[in-house]
Amino acid sequence: MKQTDLIPNDDALRQALKRRAERRQTECPPPADLENLVMQRIMQQAESTAATGRKRQRSRVYSLILPALSAAAAVLIGILLWPDTEKPSAVIPGVGSQIAGIAKDETHPSTTTADIELQEQPLVAQQTKQISTPVHQLGSNRISTAREPISVGEGSSRRDETKEDRSRQADSAPTLADRTGNGADPQNNNHEPLEDLIAGLTIVPQSADLGSGVTMRLGEHCSVIEEHASPIPADKQALVDIYIAEAALQVAYQQRAQAEALRAYAASITGEETPKEIIAF
Amino acid sequence: MAQNEQQLINEILGGRTEAFGQLVSRYGGALTGFVASFVSHRADVDEVVQQSFVAAFEHLRRYDARRASFQTWLWRIAHHAALKHLKSQKRFTLFSDFAPGSAASPSGIVSPRPGSALGGFPTEPSTADVPSRRLKLLEAAIDSLPPTDQLLLNLYYTEERPLTDIAYILDTNANALGSRLYRIRQRLAQTIKRLEYETD
Image (cartoon, rainbow over all chains, first blue to last red; front, side, top):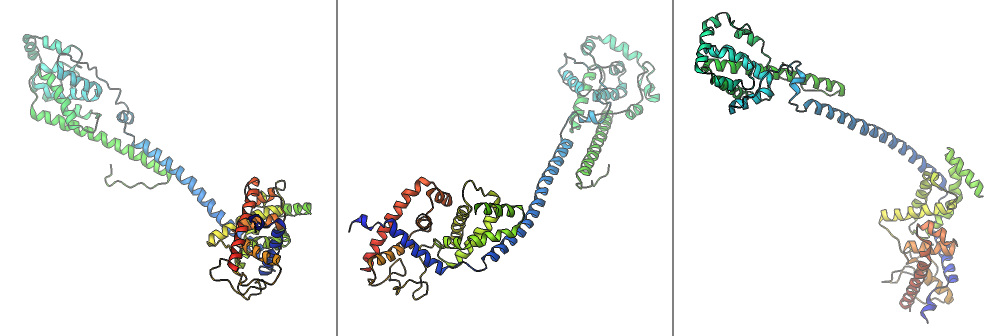
């Protein structure tokens, strides 16, 4: 028998398939209540779909609102915590406007460095200058020079002063006893007593590192004056350092209190609870 | 008929859900026969038929009368539902589950030959006509085909549907169906030859 004869023709296939379908219909007749079964399943499916839809709607709302709130809170917190060196100037008004007329003294390297720093922090330099004024009253020849702002060439001009000029200034300047008594300089009305100067201090630190920086600046500033006057007593120097550090800490406390107030305000907007500080300002 | 059917569909889409029962009663029998042509287990057939109608109801809005008739669209859903169900059951039934002595078993069948892949095959040469014997061999060979090939043969030879409709139901290319039919018939020939050798 040829291979091609074995391939069933269309008629043979139709007959075989027909007999097979009849057999299958006998084996698997459709259920009598097929319509009821199908409608029941449709109703059950509709109920479960409705319940799932409600759940999805709720989760969709949550999934939209929560990220938005988180993003808004993150932006607010980022703004609050943004490290800004100019923030103290902005937070505490009037600080940036007090700029002393400090210029470089190019002839003295340390003076140049100190003056640069003083230019960056004019208030510190100004206060330092003011504080150092009564401190250095021991050296009467320093009074007039310390009171005035350090200008360009002043150091060199001072350098050019002869010893005779210095002695002349020292003789004309009031003594320490006169100054400490009433705190006023009879020759210059701009001098103030130490207590008045301290009361009027409004120092703004440039960075968190106050001690070494301030000390450095003070040291350098003093080194400029030291060229022309007698050395600063150690006890007075420490007093000035301590007072400047305390004033700087006060400024820092004020900044922190303002940051906390802003943070609390942001938390009140977002509805988040903020941890209370252990130490109250 | 088509217009009434379209009106019925519009009513169902309008919210009259109970009208879908008329479609179920109209196509339930034919759909059961269609699914039974390539799904063997009774429980599977019932489950696939019900799933097909539920799926048709859920996706009734997607039905496009310009693309295919409602029956063709329903057959397509049933085909996908059957394959999905069989895959989930991990049961691709290739053979008819004839039990010896059962009412469903064809006459002349004593018991499955040991080692034979097919059940219900006669152990002795039947005294019936050769064509009858060959028809039985052919039936057995068809039962040995994969479900999709059985479905293709049923759609083409029994329901006499055009190849475009069959391609839509099976979600395949119409041009490939012709060569596929030829390969199916070659496989049937090989199976019949093997069965004849086993029975001789």
